[in-house]
Length: 372
Image (cartoon, rainbow, N blue to C red):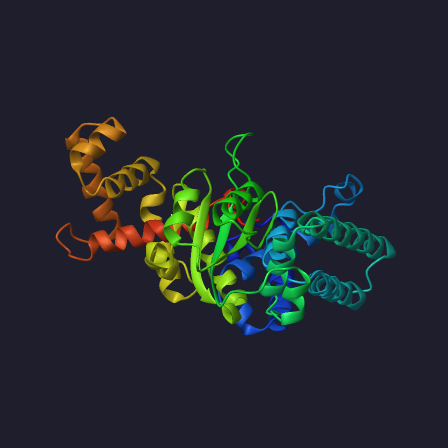
């Protein structure tokens, strides 16, 4: 059985998962897979589907894959056509079928694969129906048109909302901390009321993509976000760049939520450093392992996180961690020794901050990640 793989843990991917995910990604336009989110979503879903194929009881209980629903909801909310999603799902299952055929697998395994495929495709269809704009929702239909790069006069005329030249593209993460929290759909309604016109958007219970015309000031968007506990990333973009801006906004939102940034509205400047640090590459891999010698001592990691969060103020760190300042000093010296740098090295604090960001990003549990 393929082991359950958390997103952000590519080293844990089985060879079968890695091969199938790589093949699928090869067929996707490069513009649509430059970041982390899509790559990791596809890898995680492939891993879960392989678990589903090998776990007959799970399929019969209708459990599906644990990350399928939020991931597909995000794809639906940025305008990815359902036929595109189903095509890639079938391609992945076909690749696994080829593996079964190559080793002359027993019929029972083939039957489990077909049962799993049926379960997954049914779940995808259900999610897309949930995200589909309700009848009469002009903003929903206009958003779908713009997010797919089709902003023809006919399409916008049919739905009664001529397109603006520029929009602020909002990626929204649902607040799941309280039952009476403002939902992404409620948030779009609040924006529409404040703007005086329907604001285009697609939403699910996991998050949303909302397109606010540029004539609606960013300060008013920020003020509306402040009335909620939502985490929102906004990117200004010309109308023809909306699809790529939505991808960028959701990449940034992924960073904000994985790093547990507080609710509010963020722009690219607010997350630029964190975004670059968490992109795939040898630099990120080196930073990810930089704190390995410290990681086996949870008290050192917690002290380091508190100290960096307190702006290197020893007194505040002592108060927050409930330890004496001498103990804070001892723990910091121990951290410096373990990573092999001097306390007087000018790049020490920068390296520690960067390494902690990468470590937190990669270890974040996907259930806390939005836009799903």
